[in-house]
Image 1 (cartoon, rainbow, N blue to C red):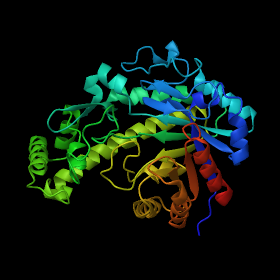
Image 2 (image 1 turned 180 degrees about the vertical axis):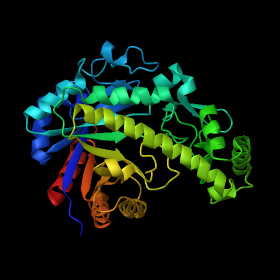
Image 3 (image 1 turned 135 degrees about the vertical axis):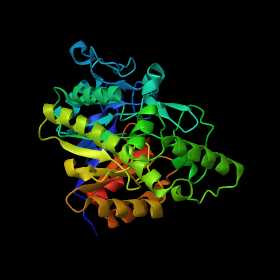
Image 4 (image 1 turned 90 degrees about the vertical axis):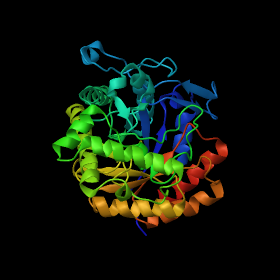
Length: 390
């Protein structure tokens, strides 16, 4: 069985601030490292064990650090601050509490996911083949978004004694999105998510053309494929090869992966300028067409990171497959972490076997979700995982 070298638990700043018992619970669990949100998308978060609030409405994406004019002035796209986080420097203050208690802190940074910025800067968002914009999905290759993400990451870690960063959404988000009162589930099954997630902005169409393919023809094929899927004449079990020719699909992927490489490189350069020896965990997925908070691992992704974090939230068989494929991609020099949840729909009596299968498949890190969202039975389940593998 593969050994587990590191266990990291996730939390928000408001889980720590105002709760004098948070650190005690962390110590009781035996957790030594926490990935603390420094920038995050909108969420409505339960806080069952917090003494003074039971839910936090983080109603837009924000940076949980002070917004310094010297960093953001002159940028076309700038981060937003939060009124609900508990302090102007909620991340810095919460990190200080944890560090003082002997807990190692990693900055959890979400890059390309911000509905408030997408509405404010629509030309910098993902667009599908029909011209529908996804305002929650900032276009990772857009120059203004690259500059925003680079600055966001540098400001997130500035002046805080951090051991690492956990980078989420370092690439393109796609069609699938847990939005407010979501009414899209199942509308475009199977290959539909891939087709609806191909971004067709003018910049991307131009980049496809530079690779020798007809961009307008690609858009037309995508539209026809989506309509055929909706009409029942294209099977949900079809693949991208049933819609695009090989050179067309290769051009689309090449542009998307180049955007992810550029974004990641700029962000990590900015982070390492602040903390040269910082440990880097990248949220990723082995499927080259994958979009979302854990987007596709590019061919160069493993070169400048220390660990890849893959979601262990799906069923065990799917999770094991993702772990094995990720290990094959990154080799033995990069750690593979499993993002383990004890929240529904996971059943607490099944979590132990699920985690064991994940570790057996090649995981050598466990990342536990989530210290602030859990109630006492769920916290106890996290504790069982820590006792088993610490």
